Length: 284
Image 1 (cartoon, helix red, strand yellow):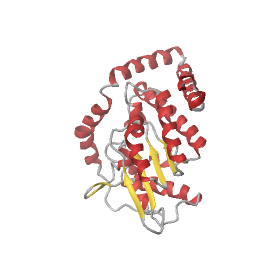
Image 2 (cartoon, helix red, strand yellow):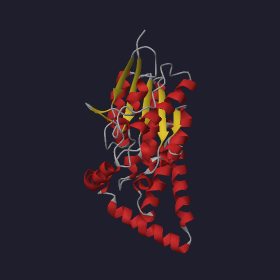
Image 3 (cartoon, one colour):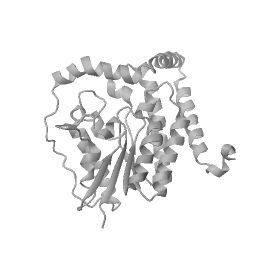
Image 4 (spheres, helix red, strand yellow):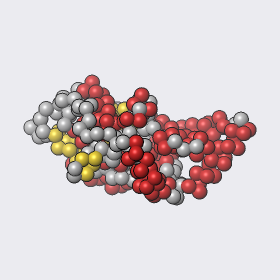
């Protein structure tokens, strides 16, 4: 009997950033792997820091399909919201292709909705709200497509642990060890309920001390600033424009129009991927 094969796709969250071990990063996926079976589990982590949905579709998915996983996690989307090229239609189309490919191969697909980076970083409201709106759009797409493909979906954007600073690393964007353990625990509970996880429950107890407040402040003042600049340089001019638009609508009392515009975009994106390839006008 061959071992259970678990392949993790995504960005820095799944890579394990925030959960350091002597030889690099560990993270929630590695913590979950041992709980999938009482027997041997083959775990491969293809997640790369900074990855977007395009990277998952074009680079990570082909490599993962070759491994023929029994379980595959696809947790992605935050980096898309931090780019000026953000397009919810493209995000939906890419995720639809990824989920479809693994579902067709018979794998159990794990997905999650995530908190928005603006609120986690504590950005001013005018800057945070556009990012939050984008993340809600991504989450809505992930919710809908997860249901369509029967994925095991974790509502990670709505859990109480998000407001617990002890769950987060110094950068305020990635979970710390305790946070990664919470993700592993919650995924394991969902998989156990579905009869997919038969191994031991991941331990919630940390092995390493949490970063001190002074260490967190030092990270934010040095490496943290550089991290944000690397991720958001191409977005910043557009984000400032979005912030001005946000303030103008709030002053007029018409902020609901922005939410409605996003809701329409999500609906259109999902409607486009609900059409089978042979039914699409460009499929000839």
